[in-house]
Image 1: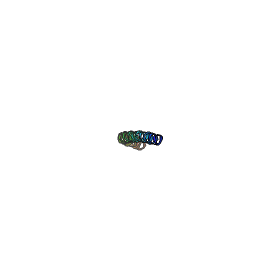
Image 2: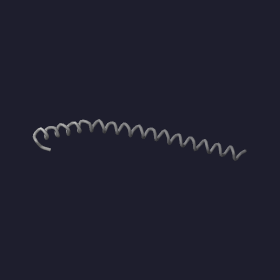
Image 3: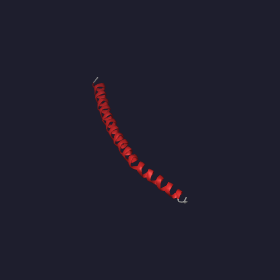
Image 4: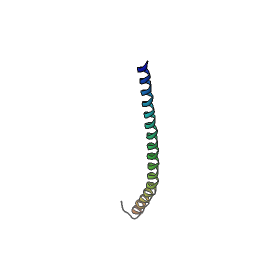
Length: 63
């Protein structure tokens, strides 16, 4: 029975470690999503400016 108890203890340790990794991965994923959302917010006004410039160019007869 000692072997079984040792194996169960080791399994418990490994499960604890994998759960910790999963929590850390979730934090990283959340930070990534926040950073990506911030970048998208910064990009939108730039795209709007580009469309405005394109419209001005087109209105002046350019391509």
